[in-house]
Length: 476
Image (cartoon, rainbow, N blue to C red; front, side, top):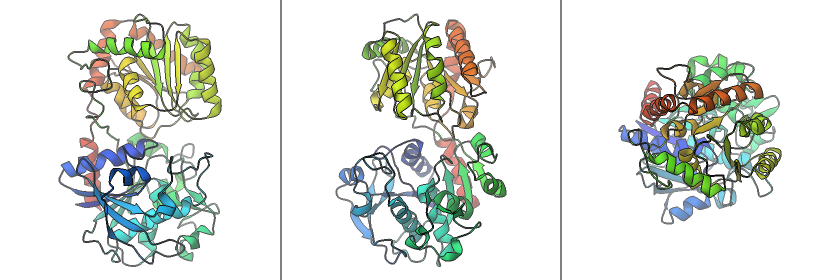
């Protein structure tokens, strides 16, 4: 089948979260299964720098509203995946985060920037396209491409079907009514059965309403977002379209995340030869200025520092964890209050707590390898990737029972299948009890080794997800 991925991010060039990882890895897995997959992504500076010879192959004209005429350039990723780079410098030649200006607020023209991305995706899937390649299915990702199914629905000449994948329902792409004209959508699109959402134009609603099929990134999250509690205002529509909604668990790049070959580690190791993990713990403690204590459990977080991730719960009870005794490592950035809180915690407990504000890919790998227990107390988590990295690195994850965390981590109480620790209520008490259970298990080497082996044996590759997506494309 011929599949067009439409995405606002693609790792390793542009990535703010799991969406970039999916767009960077899933196309290659689908291509390995024999499918012809191409990725449409804005020509951000990082991509133009990496592909200076990308030749222009088309200029989509007459896109409607205030949408400009962009260029479409062609490149090939190192893994062989063809890339279609949407080139319009006034929209995309901006440094830093693809969505935010230097002051940390959304770009005021985001509706036009990502409206253009959606419109060109629909153009490629219509009779108007001048390309010599025609997709069977356009696979759209998150709100930034949510208008593509709407354009396919409202404009003439549609040829392709559409699949809309929700990576995080909390981000909805809301803009005022005037955006309808600016984006070249007809008046008929404004209404409950169109793109309107409580007086706003919603890119996310457009995708959920008009895509031929909808998916999200774990089976549990697909169920959760149909509830009023976790549906972010979209639960009624998702229940209405439940017959077209499926949950497909993400995979991870098992070449990039492999403790047996990871170049970032002090010493590589595997499930069969786990000795190197202790060396990585010692190296991590030394790098971060922690007391060199192999006899203390080392707990870790690599995350956005937000309440969604439940890190306010962790901050509240971290002093109790450190008194257990234990050590804590945190890598991430986010809300100022949480950044300040964790930084102050580390300053007060220098030998047992280290906090790095920002992101460091190499350090993230060393934390996965050097930690004993990985913490993910998320209030909601569509899929989550770090718990899968942790399982692969023999670092049993401790998670809240939500979304993809519930689909991948089995509590250690299950002595045959357990690979981590799971708690349910989003409270400091429940989190502390789970941490105490995990630390008690860590002090039992035989039990701990069994947990590690089961986690490392789990298949987290993209192959299974690629098969599920291929079946979904075929059904369209």
